[in-house]
Every structure is written in structure tokens, then in C-alpha cells.
Length: 216
Image (cartoon, rainbow, N blue to C red):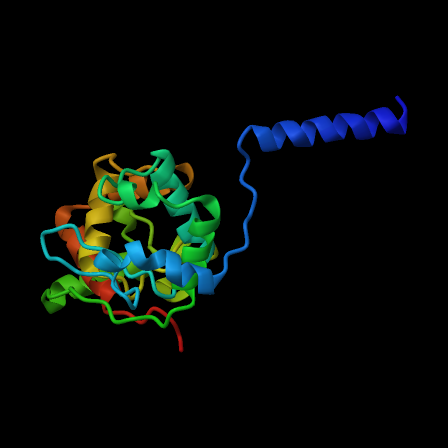
């Protein structure tokens, strides 16, 4: 086979890959993102701090989260692989560039304080155990095994969960537990959440909300 035919074949393969929907990274612009984020303010606040609503649909802190992680979540919502009915109308109005821009904008905002976590010392101790050491008797892997030192996140796959609102963490763990969310690698979160009791979920959500989101 000649080199010309080989190169031609590679070109066809690359073209087919792009046509099949493989993700192509788009560089976000935080300045443009600030303008595009106008639709996000009502729930996620002007400072990206979100809202903790006990017993309700809490909105996560976006400020300081990894930009690529947010890009993936927004695309997952838009494509329907992450269930978020109240988010859909807003995300549906963003194109790929705007998603990248909004994510870049929020990733550069200063981290705000988390809310929630009003539990007793015994529950906080249980939350700390799950977050840092896990519970091997219940086959519950520690949060830091995936979310990294301090549970402050690892790249675009495992978000920082320290310093996140307790209500949001709790809601998401229940969503994984009930199969309403399944957009994580290898269903890791689904498998772990199903082994957790409601008390475990409340405990770890409370403890994580009380931890610093960054080392700064």
C-alpha cells in the first residue's frame, strides 16, 4: 500500500471520527462567558455561589470548579444523559462555544462558602470516615479515593466536592442511588451510593460542606 493511500485512509478515519460525534475541545473565554452567564444568575447567583435549600432542589456552587468538568455536565444535560429538567431550558439555549465560555468564567471566580451541614458531632464523625477512609464493612469506598486529596477534585472527571453545599451533595447522592443520574465513569457513584444509608448520605454531605474547597 502506498503512502498516499495510507494517508488518504487516515483522513477518512479522522473524518468519520469527527462526524460520529467525538468531542473536540473548544477553548473558553471567561470575558464572553460572563455575558453568557446571565441566564445562570437566578439559581447559581452572580458570584457563582449557588443556593443551599434544605429539603429542596439546591443549586451547586460553580465558582472555582474545573472548567472541563462543567463543560461535560452542561453537554450531558443538553443531550439528556444527565437528568436536570429545570436546567434544560437554559442549557438548550447555549451553543458549544457559549458552554465553553460560561464554564471558563465560573472556573475563574473565587470560591464561596458552602452552606448546610447542621448535624451533630456523631454524624460529622461518620461523614469524615466515609469521606476519608470509607467503610469496608459496607463496601463503601472513600470519597478521596476518586476526588483526590482533601476531596478538592482531580481533573475534569472527578469534581471538587469539599466546600460544596450539603443539600446539593445529598440530592446528587440520592439521584445516583435511585438511578436518576448515571453520567459518571463506569457507574462508580451509582454503585457506591446504593451501599449508603440515608444517614450516611446526610453525614458525608454535611462533613464535605464544612471542608475547604481549596488549599488557598
